[in-house]
Image (cartoon, rainbow, N blue to C red; front, side, top):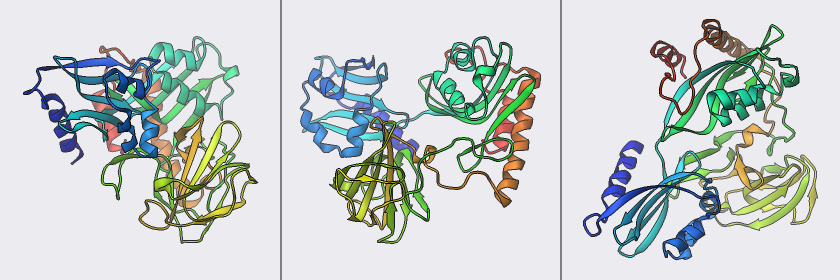
Length: 401
């Protein structure tokens, strides 16, 4: 369904208006100083078109990255007929001219995803070496973020080795989004340090202890996730593609909502499709949002403590039933709450622990094979090396990667 939808969009993109206006496709780069309003001005398009977007879609418009590659369909008289502008790694803005004026929609983008591996010796430090040798700065950032919880990077010496297995989304030959590291290892002072990603989306050490310490707590006493954070989903009510900048928790109407950390209430009131909303500003540029509440308990300007009741679960705004939409933002950019908020106790127990240990043994065997055989890393922006050898790719697939 998604593929056929995207195909129809692409056919429309390259064929619409071509009978009325001889046109050409232009491959452009989004300039650093350019924002979407200026882009509309350049093409004599009214800014009123932005009023057709809701709050979440408006955030997407502000997230167009500098140097982002995008397509335009330009008529011979210079009129912009259509534009496809990626916003993030999952969605894109589709701006097109119709007989009634311009329309703006958010639609999914197509990308490829594959499994890659990295193996290298340290010359300077792991971060800089990954950037220089693998040409993927996001992989370097994610590797450093994860390993810093269990490895002293200052103690790493020249010729120490590291290995990473990860999945990466790719568009137009370039990596997009945060790499999904499955397992990573660094050997320092003849000792190997591993991290493993379990099927709950969290990272653990070899003993099954959670690595990333989180200072925020749960917004509800009992957690039942009904919709996860994603940069692309088909909205069940609006029947169109949207980002979902938060995590939804199912709960009975009237269930107390708790502040996940100390902070100041910077908004308490009605907010469009979010219904009754409270926003709390925390330290380190973090802000949390609690939507669809039945009743708000705290007012703007109030300082709340972690665990304090700030409101009650409801179904106000655009909602299919009682639940809490919980959003987490850093510097006004949405991030996955599961990466920072502590939803469960550290460590795995019982059947989860046993399943993790089985998974760890499989991961360890794969990464040690790469390490022992000195298999070459995939280097981005090159075409002379395979991402994954066919034999290994089949093996990864059999493991559900």
